Image (cartoon, rainbow, N blue to C red):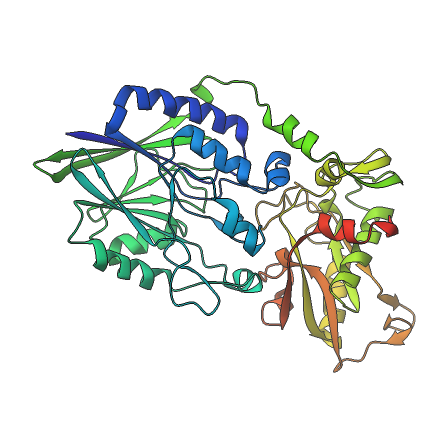
Amino acid sequence: MELKLFHTNDIHSNLYNYKKISDFLINKKQQYKDHMVYVDLGDHTDRAHPYTEATLGKGNVELLNEAGCEVATIGNNEGITLQKEELKSLYDDAAFDVICANLREVGSAQPYFKPYVIKEIKGIKFGFIAATVEFTPFYKALGWEVSEAFDWILHAIREINTEVDCIIMMSHLGRYDDESLAMMFPEIDVILSSHTHHHLEEGEWVGDTLLAAAGRFGDYVGEVTLDFEAGKLVDKRARLYNTDYLTGTEDKYYDRGRQLLSTVVKHDVAPIERRLYSTGRFISRLAEMVRIFTDSDVGLLHTGLIAKPFAGGDLTEYDLHKVLPHAINAVQIELTGRELKEVFNQAAQNEFKDEIVRGLGFRGDIFGCFVMDNIGYIQSEREYYINGEVIQDRKTYKLGTLDMYTFGRIFPQFRYSKKVYKMPEFLRDIVKMYADKL
């Protein structure tokens, strides 16, 4: 007997592609009827899309329902770009099971979602287990714990191993962790892999475990074929369908999002220019806003944050979303005066100004130049100042900046410094809070 397992991952609200995938899956359901199941591996939502922003992801859940999703897990875009209560209510109207073994509320010993679900398909019992990537400090800032994924997966395997005929791992941990999972837990028959945006044309074998992955943005939809004889899994194989070859329909969701985000943030706002290699009025004000919002001494941003210009006039939530579509939060970092001066000098070199940035919550393209607020340098005196006072090497200062800088590549000083992540507000939320400064 042949059963089909269809899977998507990391759609990131590319809803034009997903609508094609949905139509494709509905047709496949008519073809295979109850011989198929469709699952999603998380990061379906991305608040860079106005429809997702306006509905806080609930619109994405409706689309998963329409596509016939039966099991889903969460990625970091569901987990850390929504407030805690928003994530709790995200799946209120879901017609599918939501599972995740390693997400807990702070102080709780049990997963918030079910760690696994068992589904019987044509007499075959499938155990679906899920886990999500351990972006621990960001989850903690929102009141969640997400850690020890492998321990929780092992616990789930032990609970269901004797009850099911086939174990499917729905992983939002990334390719390298998934390869480790396959080596550590040979009981897993198939690992559906995501988060690192890789795609595997015909799957990949690690021992007897088949890994399958469908890339990103809905570029592909994955299919795993499972053959059973007398209730035993005897063959498994993977393939991808390129959505470029699927029939497309009109994408109405962008316009819906624009209509839902029509509220005016502020009237008579000056034009917002997109200037990558020089400081403009808006980005300077934004650096000031971040400094004030984080209760810091200095603010630090980069010009590439302005993804689209604004012509001026009445600034709506949609306009502001176009200017700042990023899933980026502010952070307060404690630095010594010496470290702060090092950061100032590194920023002044603009080493990354022409780089094209992917991920880290950034939804623009070119990085641009750094902009700093409330810090000065008099070259003739070789002195650095905050509020007219000389910066002291051993004194502690607070820098208000972006969480995307804290991974250590741009400013190594940030990696081990004390950090307070200011969540869940995005940059556009901070602008709304200080709209009087526009």
